Image 1: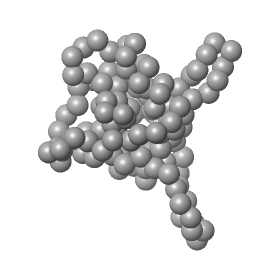
Image 2 (image 1 turned 180 degrees about the vertical axis):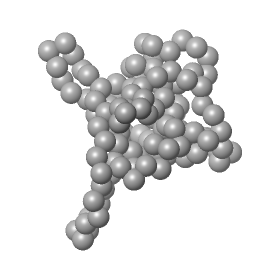
Image 3 (image 1 turned 45 degrees about the vertical axis):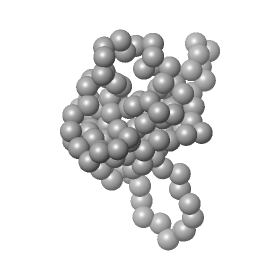
Image 4 (image 1 turned 60 degrees about the vertical axis):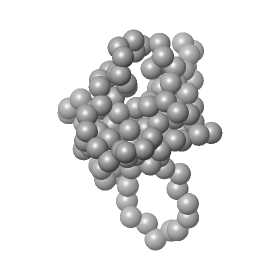
Length: 121
């Protein structure tokens, strides 16, 4: 499961606009190895999952991460130098407690025949 906070969506949009000038390229959440997650710039492939926010394809997610049993959270921290994007990963333990959980639906790019799911504020 991948959870992206509203503030993280805004920061990802800012990063995309400021850092990506290659047509069709997007930010990609990827496994950098040795248990480290990170962002890169890449083009989507047919097996990728896509996060769209306010009509913009914002984030590409590798299939292995999108189906990972761990919860991946993208959020921001306020630092003296400004906003910093934070990516965390934790094991989700089954619970007998019921309730609602906010989550970000992702769609495999290969299944898209219509626009991807829009996540709006």
